[in-house]
Length: 389
Image (cartoon, rainbow, N blue to C red; front, side):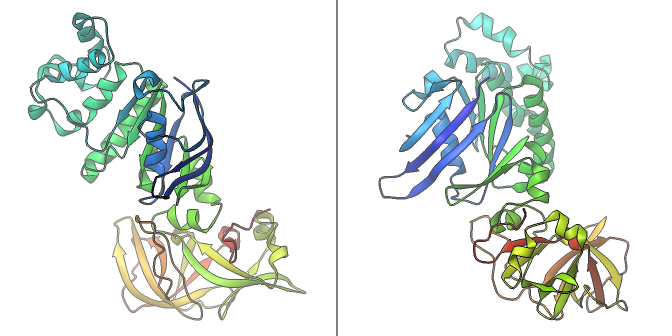
C-alpha cells in the first residue's frame, strides 16, 4: 500500500498538446480514488504516469515517499487493469492467477498455486479454479483479473475503464465486487472512468477533470451538493442539472433571483447556504437546479417563485417520471457536458424535473413546479465559479 502524490505534474506531448496541466493531487494510503471526466480530459494520462507508461514533462510524482519520475514500470510494483484484460485461453483460471506471480518473479511455481487460492470469491473454489476462461461465467471471468492482481500484493491498483465493455447488469455487479475487494484488501486504488455513476458509487473521493485540469476533488456527496464550478455542476448528476441564466437583484425586501420573467425570493436559508450572494447583486449569474429538487404542484397553482409550463414529453423510469417541460417566462441554457467534453447546445432547451412515478402526468399537460430557494445553486456567469462564501 502506498500514498501517491502529484506535485504540479504536467504532461505535454511532442506536438504541443497539453494532456495534464499542473496537477496537484494527493491520494491517501488505502484510498479508493476515482478520476472522472469526459474523453480527452487527461484522466487516463494521469493514470499511465503513475504506472510509468507515460513520461512526466514537469513536476514530481511521489509513490510511497519516493520520487518515481525515473522509475521503470517494473520497479514501481503497481498493478494495472486496462479496458480489455486478456486471460490466457490455454491456462486454467488458477493458472492465470498464478501467472501474475511468475510475471513478478515469484520464487517458484509450486508456491504460486496456494497463494492463488487464498483469495475470497468464486475463483477460490475447485470448480472455478480448474475451469478454462472460455467456460467461465461472465462475472467470474471479469473478476479473474482482480484475483490475478491481488496475489501480487502490489502497492497500488490502477484501473482504466475496466467495466466499459460489460452490459449494464454485469457492470452493476462488478462495481460492488471491486469496491468490496478494495475495502477488504486496503490497497490504494486509482480508478478511471467517464461514467459518473461509477464514480459516485465507488470512490472514497472523486477527482473531476476537464481539459487536463483538476476541476474539483471531493467526496461524492460533496460533489453533488456543492459543485465548485459550472462544469462540475453539469457533469455530475443524472439527469443533469438545469442551468438557467439570470441575475441577483436587491430591494428593500431583500434579495431575489430573476430568471427572465420569473422572480424567486432568496430567503434566509438560501442566504445562509450561500452568503456570497449579496456581492453579486445586479450581476449576471447562472442558476442551477437539479431535476429532483422540484415539487410538482399541479396546473392550478401559479404564484411567486413558481415555474410553470407545458409538458413536452415524459420518460417513465418506473419509480419516477422524468418530465421535460417547455418553460414559460424563462429560458434554460446548456444542461450539461457530453462524454466527449462538448457543452450541450446552448440554445433554449427544456427544463427537466423528476417527479413521483405514480403521478398522472402526460404530454401537453400544463403543470407548475416549486423549488426550495436553498437548493438553487448559483454560479458567476463570467468566471463560472460557484457562488458560496
